[in-house]
Image (cartoon, rainbow, N blue to C red; front, side, top):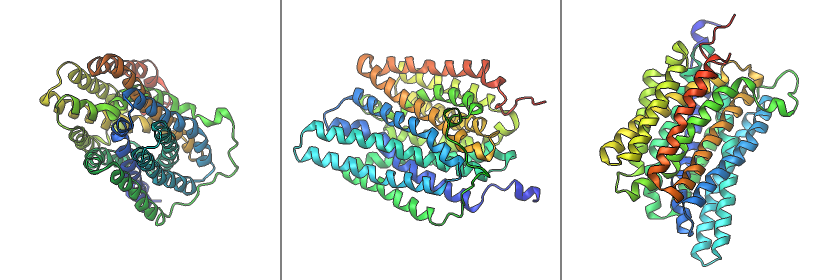
Length: 402
């Protein structure tokens, strides 16, 4: 195989899986961004919304290791279609919940249905994006792994930029319309799935199911460091739109549009930096940027600081997430990539769900400003974990071997 072919990134399957991942996250983020407001129409508050965020992530965390085991045994496309189907059905469940409430059914019945659907969507997302990440990592040359994962992650960035504004616009018409559109994205994803050529990459011998094998130990340091950082992003994703609306700031859609533009700029201009210099440059600078963003939102919320915080948050998430995912996965052999990706994404879910759950409790008891100040301390913890543990682990992109 020539060096040029070995270094090729933009294969047919890699391009298709990026687009499918984009559609999955359009569905996911549209619901995530508006779910607290949907629950409010059912008579629930931020505390319940935070609890739902935690339950959503808890279901995904429980399932991901087993999904990773299935992927280790070569079941790529069948797992993906299960996820796409679930992501298609759950918004229709939310719509049914809203219709029930509007028709005068007991409020508790509508809320219970919404919460159950939220948990099932956590499962569907686990099936979907664990598989898309594994298919993407299958396609990448080792020498351009971090760069390629950065491009793959831009699907999330584009969804993050488009989905909040789109969901808020559709929500202003009706929640039902918003739910139907989010389901329609999965119809398109399924159509693209039919054109994929990815074949099952089965190992020579079946990978046995055991508790130790469900978690990839080499992926743990990067996963834990990312988990702690993502407590901040989980708080933003779940409550920034509501915070902006209650404080007469520009919309949450504007904030996430800015973060996504910044994220895309970072990944196009600095995407190969982790391959060359290691993940540390992003761990330190991105945590510092997110710390400043949270402090600005906590102590000086105004139009100017709102925009600055969005730029800093976009840089932070845009830089740290692909660098740490590359650290988690890049030394895993093909038969362990499912587990390595599921380990990292378990941490991802815990971070986002934990951040949303913690933020919801803090907001209901202490208000937004104190929530931002408390959650901001996660960035300090993330830096310390990397300095004393991650940078010295063999999974580090700059680890000195031999």
